Image (cartoon, rainbow, N blue to C red; front, side):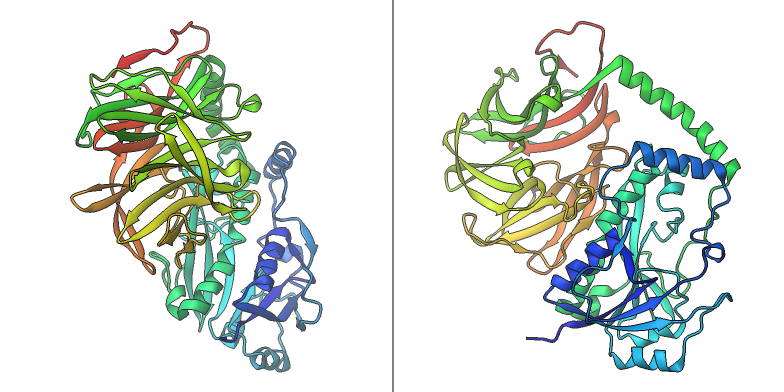
Amino acid sequence: MRPKLRIGLLLEGASSPYWASRMIERIIRSDHSEIVLLVIDGGMEKDLDPVHATESFLYDTYIWLDRRRNHGSPDPLVIEDLPAGLEKVGRVYLKRTRDPGRTLSPEAVKRIEDMDLDVLIDIGKVTPLGEISRCCRYGVWSFSPGDGEEYDGRPPGFWEIYDGVPVTGSHVRRIAGGATSMIYRSHSHTVRFSEVRNRRQLYLKGISFIPRLLEALYLRGEEAIIPVEGGGLAAWGPTPRPGPGNLDMLAFFFKRLPWNAAYLTKRTLFEERWALRYELGKRIPTTYDNTTLLVPPPRTWWGDPQAAQHDNDFYIFVEELELPRSRNHGHISVIKVNADGTHEPPVRVLERTYHLSYPFVFEWKGVHYMVPESSAARTIELFEAVDFPYHWRPVKNLMSDVFAVDTTIVRRNGRWWLFCNMKESEGAPINDELFLFHSDDLLGDHWEPHPLNPIVTDARNARPAGRIFEQDGILYRPSQDCSKCYGHAVNINRIVEMDESRYKEVQTAYLEPGMFPGASRVHTFSHVHGLTVVDTYISRPKFIPERSGQRDSS
């Protein structure tokens, strides 16, 4: 067995924030790395540290109110004792002075060098690194909020809200041999109404970044930590932006007034729900002017439509949810579409004691299978039809003890490929990271994770949005654009490479709400030979009566 990577931790003291403690625990439990040194730096006094400095009464008040409104757990920045398992790890203490640099004795440098570190992880990020980065084979790594191009993460997640950008980035920086590069980057939907929630999701998702990179380095070598596109070397990094002052906060409050007014008006006067649009035809539509709009009964949602064909009949499987969501959970229903474009009433076909959605249906060797989303049970479940499409029985759990959504399976080159979005840490966003697994046996007991997991780490393009379909021998993967909101639009991505070691896709089309009359979001796209179906978010006045089961032609 190869020796583990030798890891050092650079800390401000004998404690760490919650997010860093969870990251350290993952490294301690790993098969690829061991922590062999703690470098303790007491840090600069707070009045000399620009990261912690603030002179804005309005900003401090805003944060105080934001914390009171959005005090969810876990808090990634709460300070706690170092995790168990580090008690016998050697320590080096750095001495700091009030000048901008730091005093480090030759003996301390020699001791760090003698530890033969592969990587030093900088958690405190208050130490001017200087020659420390040259003491480690692969440099010093650190996690930071901010995309590393326009935003440097100070304050974490604020300026993205202020500027109204749809996504907020986070990244891992590497300093090696005097050069700086970005070796990992991810993007999340910007939580526009709360800086606290915006930064919380960044840190909780970021728990996984460095452990993933260490595993990739261990398995694939230095090629696994090359700079990401746009990640630059040496001069890389955004120009630091000053902390928000009182004038900035006044401008911020006035900028938010129209958004808040529009939001409250919409919530008060309109009811939003998912509805279906479908069109018969062998080819994928190039425009959507002739789709049939199928509106569910009042206080009901139809979402996550999945098209299926059996003999000469077409079916749309949907998540059906009766409102309010707080008192009901979703079940799976099916709507038969007739040859003339009319449809039959929905029939309930699968229900569990927990929420079901995204009923992915496919056929293999004459048997119809369904993989509904069952994240509420922390499973990926496989069902087979005993009387298609109305009766199903459970076959097995493809995976257990996972939080996975929108599982989508395709067979290619003699293997099964399973796509799903996952979150690995409590409180991390679910829309950001796409994972890929493969197996030679659909009913086998092992799905091998792809070495590049997550293969997409961007809320704009990660989450599955329907069946992977083939045209002219090429596979296309629909995915959700969750940048502005959940299910804002649908990307169509051409899969360029997919094998046991590589994955690459490129966007070829974009379905946005404006393509569908009356739609504010486009969420799912499903196509089989003869039927295309999508679901869109529509708004209806709350105080105007509505006909049940309304069916229109758009």
